[in-house]
Length: 96
Image 1 (tube, helix red, strand yellow):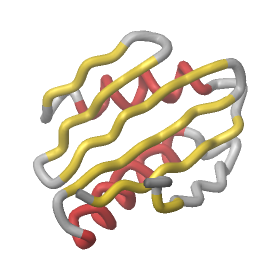
Image 2 (cartoon, helix red, strand yellow; image 1 turned 45 degrees about the vertical axis):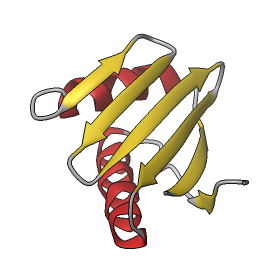
Image 3 (cartoon, rainbow, N blue to C red; image 1 turned 180 degrees about the horizontal axis):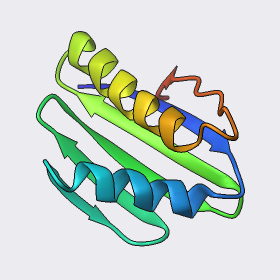
């Protein structure tokens, strides 16, 4: 398994979490509430956590290529939803 994480500082963390989950929920399995979410894409998963002014993202996939694709899809959608804030999404390998 391959895992990357990213942390975005925003006062709209819960809003973006819910927006991402609702958007993907039209096509794939999702679970979410205002503080946490899970998106199951065909090529990887994304877990989301919103707390105060931080949105934490964790993407997991079976291969490095699928991990890159999962991270790119999640980041592209978040960047579109948060275009006013122009968030900097910097994926980092998860600590073992």
